[in-house]
Length: 96
Length: 383
Image: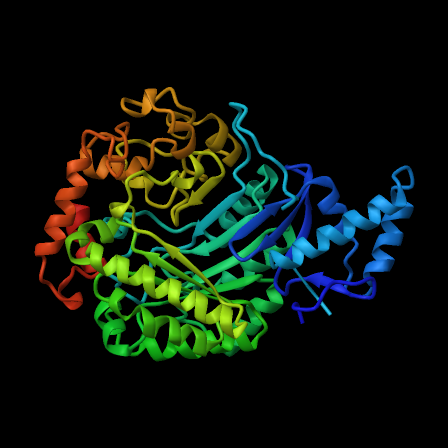
């Protein structure tokens, strides 16, 4: 299921057992997994927050474009796609 | 590749203890000769109560701790484990149970899951019951561990298995990895034994030879290729024994840097083996955790680089390896401020070479090593 390319219709979700959380003490989102933690930058945190297990990539992009309306829409779409491909490659997320 | 992580730079300021290791008890049904618990564990005072643990967890979370390991001894010995897990979950910790699997059954796995436990890591001693029995001192444990590993997986947890490697099981690594594969593990930690506590006492009988180590690394590489070719997602993490490294590990990412251990009696430590160092550590029964972490003499003693001696003091690599491990420096040289003798720039590196030669001459079987139990521990309590 992770061999296939991520498209606009893909639904991405965090790997089972992994958890995304805002850490007040660190002022950032972190990705928690068995005995480990990824300290995320702002954009990675913003994208992963959108993954609810239901919305597909196009819907996630639309939500982020609405949230960051000052940034060019095409650039957001490209950033989100690139990030998700990389996150899947690193095993942070699974997708249909 | 793009980096999606925050860059955390050292600015000379003490950060939060992001990792908390809660050693709930030193009691354990097994007697592994490679245990890293202190030799005199039998003399350690009364365990923190449920209420004291909850208070300590609450304080640690307020300090910024987020990764939590429940360990020991065997943490399942504590009947209040489910209560503590539930509290940890409520506080927002990501909680890991680090267990032998003994004391676990399906109903307890279910109860822990309901309490919000995030992860269970089970340790295996070997691929077959005979070696496992010789190492851990229990004939029944191996079958029980396998059954519990399967039950953990069936409950929907990611299965992370931990195998401590030493000279008595490292030659069977191929069979060990095959067993983990068959069990359906998601990740396997092949952790060469760290030589502290009981493992240091048994060092000559545990340390593998360089040839054994190289064969094990080759086996691991072969399995990685084999797993990748099958499209099987089982991560193999191989932890090298530092007695065969030429530079020391950056132990705990630096003393009092991100890691805090709470011992069963409430001692607040920078790592689980530090309590044997000749110094006084704060206790959560006497001081708030915030004060212990930021203001205690013990936690500040080896922070930064001012404490370092030569050759570390003038070495360009000191920012990367933080001088290695204080416990190892003390165990081998008697001086906790010495350069970790693992480093081949250390004037004491010959001690590591001597330990390897001593191990090569040791002919004891696994069953002949000193078992980690309360009876043996009392010998060290008197000493």
